[in-house]
Length: 257
Image 1: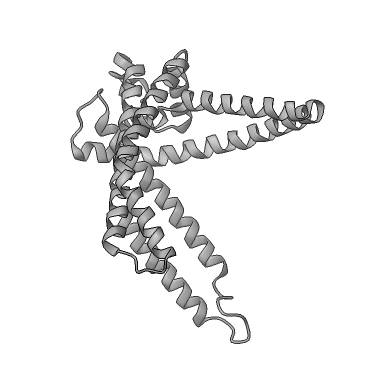
Image 2: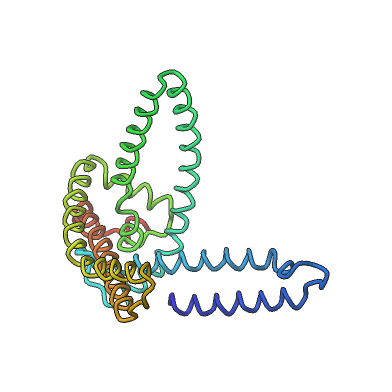
């Protein structure tokens, strides 16, 4: 789906560029006729791309959830169904972020003006703590939308907030342990790629011809690592959600109908 989306986007941008140049005034600078059409096309592409990414992660989360045993088709359907919901969640959280940032900015300015550098340190630590807290409270947004099949973005946020209530410390601890494990595994997995990349960089700086085999190996290892980490992240969210939801997820279709 992503490859098809990029192909359509390439054709769309190519057509827009050709149309812009064809309809441009010869007296104007090249590309002056592109304007709004190009901007709208880019916005639509990123919106579609975001939906595809949300559907991908939703499907992986549905497939990994211990609360169900979906087929490939069922997991894909859950992902596609959850994508618009997650887009709505992102919009709502974005609005909340903007409002919160304005309030925090005013408070931060007052503290820095009153306490100087100490106020900046207090603000930095408070923002870090707030970010960790919010992450822990909202970590299961995607499995709530995909696994529990809730279509209302507001209900998804409220359900997530209720699930994680009283479990912030446990969620933080789980993520710290998992981050340490990922760093260790990633270091072992990416070490060959980093060595190949360092050798490639040294070869280029010395004026030599780069080894395309080495470049291919480096990017292949990085691609595989990225895919594994994406799957791992979806599975971790699904596991945390299952731990928090437990038996309460049995009759969710009736609860949130």
